[in-house]
Image 1 (cartoon, helix red, strand yellow):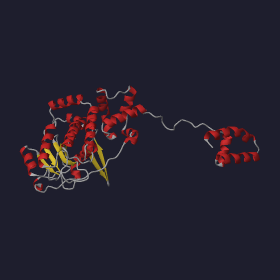
Image 2 (cartoon, rainbow, N blue to C red):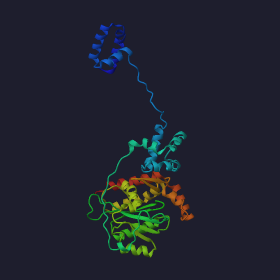
Image 3 (cartoon, helix red, strand yellow):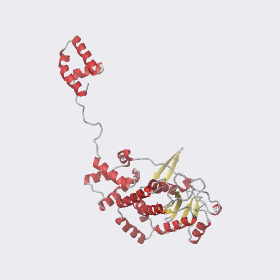
Image 4 (cartoon, one colour):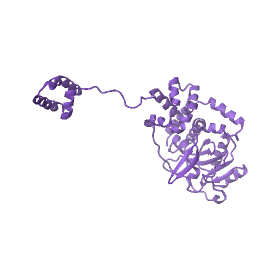
Length: 378
């Protein structure tokens, strides 16, 4: 029997049930249970009290953040590369201003106010159903032992006195499921102090290609290059790079073998700046190299001007647990502007560039080039 039929039956029988004698109620109740399949106690309550409309009132506080706020948040979150809430919340005023300046976002005063007052926890709740996970790739680092003893080791604890211009470098392979043959690579560099990131596409893993990529990276930096810290890959630990650093008066150091945390800054950027964007497929052709280079031309601007980062200020160990304290998230661009070592001319140039950049247009060009890259034959 349908719910509507049961309601009609209750309306018809309720009056007769209430006025009936004990024996008659038993008979009516037996018939009602047989027709509806209700439990006997539920049938008694229904015939005595009748159907009560369900209340529409929800317990707890009323909802504050409307669908308009959530839609705006999803738009901003997508433009910012779907970063975590603790990085995005302090950056919201700046990115919302940039999107409104270029006509990419139009908000009412109320929606704008609610969007900018979001807490990280509330943002996480609103975005729960929109997150996804990624896979992992292969390691292609081959130890270079030729000059290992002559290049000093630098660990993750020795960056306290660094200034802008000391970079960690690493190679990211686009080899797919096999490391056989030649394939494209990415030379990724990140500045320790400002988190300024510079990815460069390479045709292969040769020392010459790495040297050219370092020169390209050096020209793009908004500050002089003072130091390079690398892993123990033979593409870095070689006479060519050692002579280059000695000639240019660049401090050249390496991490300990098999201690990835010594290069925690670049390992984190390999994930967010390369793997999350390009993925794990194999690329070999000149066309793929050109497209990957085009992706990085826009991606470097997108990462440095519109991707806020947090840096660890202090660590405190309590038993087996380590409590980390982070600073307020800021973009590498803002961190460069705050450094007294960077000249006023460079800062003015960066500010002019920032005003002209449209994050939505950057993201669109990146996605368009990535789609062309992914459509290439493997």
